[in-house]
Length: 216
Image (cartoon, rainbow, N blue to C red; front, side, top):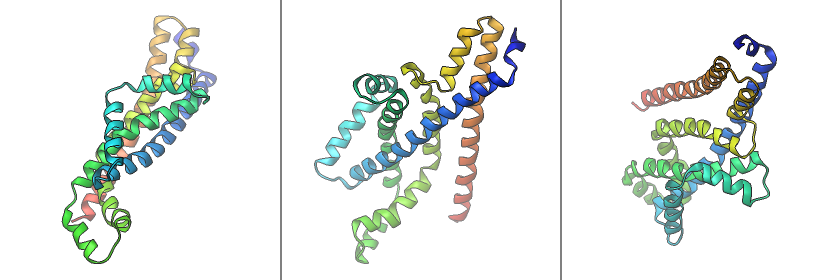
């Protein structure tokens, strides 16, 4: 019966899976932003040797499914399922983030850099204090969109044995097999993903609108 699913223990079971999903997503986002920023700067500044290597990295990642990276990380490294998922998703998303960040950097006027150089600022200071803050502000919408993609893609980590939200949903489906129960479980899992991603998107829109008002 569908009513069998409506108890505190099963709800807690799914919420614990959601916590794992958020943990994987959080660390994947943090590491991918760091990696993407470094790669974006390398490509923006046209640094010899490093730029061609970063271009190869981006081209490879963008043409291979995220799930394949997760499987490779799990079965070719000593990392446990959760850590291998974080490593693979960070590596994968870092390439996407580098493109987003490079686009934000390219949207800025070159005159600002020339003016900063004329004032004796170093390249590091220009990137740190002038270029990156403006670039991050310009890329809030696509960056937040990518963050929601990371949260959704974290479901792939279930394939290597991590009991995140989707994985726990599949465990429940194995126990409660009627059509109504399966539908209810899928609806609960989808609802939790929706709540998290909608909240993140709503917050991002509000922050972007605030920053847009302040820029006038």
